Image (cartoon, rainbow, N blue to C red; front, side, top):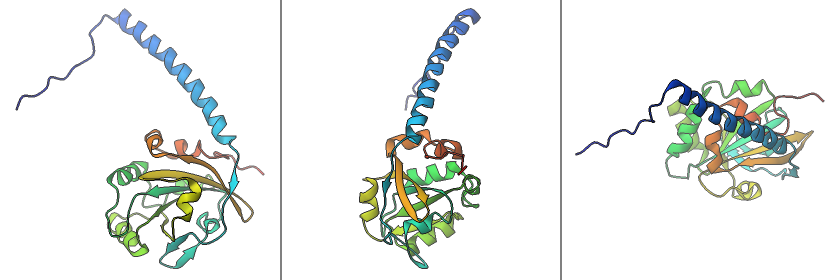
Length: 202
């Protein structure tokens, strides 16, 4: 079997390298300004009310969306592809491992009054078995029906749906589609999609 040669970048003198790097730096600055503007648009999105009916099932029974907040102001739900009788999605599993803090249940987000929970179509017992096998401790629920997926516009594979609560009322504020999940890899990139970010005055 013939190995394909690795194509390395062009070799240039130091002055040419500095010119090339300066050009890229200018493009990066434009990109960052655009991203900052987009962050403000994420936080300025309107919100729409969600149902107060039970949507999730756990080993202790059914839960409403407000219950999943665990008393915090913001909630992010990861739609994890795990069908009943199936196996957990490899991509979803990799993304979860990269996020880290799996033994602590994302305590670093809790400090910012934000809960990250998971939902799947798998049964509660199937979810519990996977969590035990992988030593994962984040909240992870089974869907009662397709009502929650329909309300958040979820289709397939993965998505993050973001909510905020005002008293006992819960509102959908944003979603992160499957193709965009690769841009999120830590709690800061998660929080920038939320309406309150890391600020909770008032």
